[in-house]
Amino acid sequence: MRSDTSTPCGARMSLSPPANRVETALRQKGYTGAILELQHSTRSASEAAEAVGCDLARIVKSLVFRTPKGMPILVLTSGANRVNERGLGDRLGERLERADADFVRQHTGYAIGGVPPLGHGTPLRTVIDQDLMAHASIWAAAGTPNALFEVRPGDLARWCSAEILAVV
Image (cartoon, rainbow, N blue to C red; front, side, top):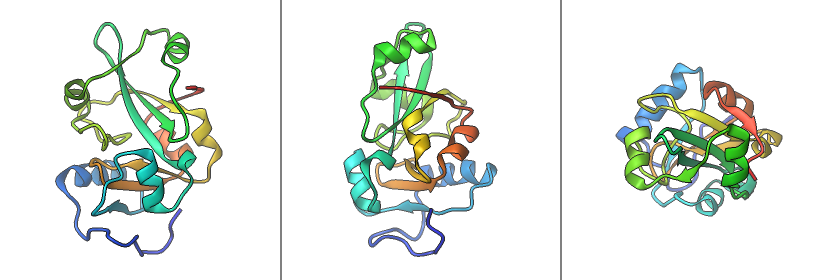
């Protein structure tokens, strides 16, 4: 994890309101790192990896699924992986389907492309990809399509009360 106070070129000095909400949630968990809110997009995993200079596998994609009963499930997966919805649904005992943008915003308070792993109005059932646990640190969205933070995967899993599962 970054231990200095430098930020990549193009980082903003003050955070937007959504990134501030994420920062507040992180600080409540004891996080001491920085949120980077850049001038350019980190909406896709490849854009995020390029922005922070890391391997795609260290980027956390925050994907929201819905059950037939309308319950949200947040899946935090490696940027290098594609979620096997049927297989993961079988492991969770739920049928999963991709949530649309309105459902995502309603249940997380954030737009697709910037959904953070925590800091939602109501805690979500959360799954974290076991492949993310192999890294010393990972990068996750921080509330906007251009904000990120670096974190140890074990800390993130604990803070989100996430189930660690294979998602591919």
